[in-house]
Length: 126
Image (cartoon, rainbow, N blue to C red):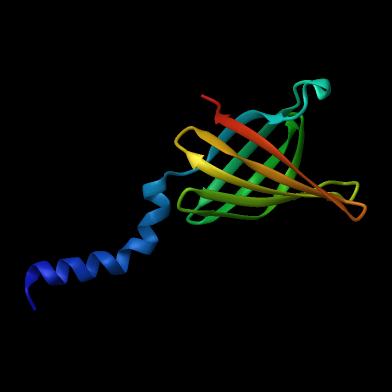
């Protein structure tokens, strides 16, 4: 085989493992707000994330003082997903698009047999 063809085949085999690092890590502290009607006022959102390969762990909540554990966190390309179970039984499912230092997406909140989807965004805290 020609060296150029071997190099191409080798790079194709390594590409799936390189994608998370190409897209960038979401490790860090993120702060943002929920996109709610004006009557609800500004509602903050705060996350501390750790990424190892495609697995994401950490905490999320309304402030640095009120955090809940993240479960089933995954990063794939520019997508980030995870769940947060609140003490009252509510489950929140987050889905973000990662764009450099900004996360934009939505959270689906399930409680008492009802479901609601809310948009939110966050920026990496320097």
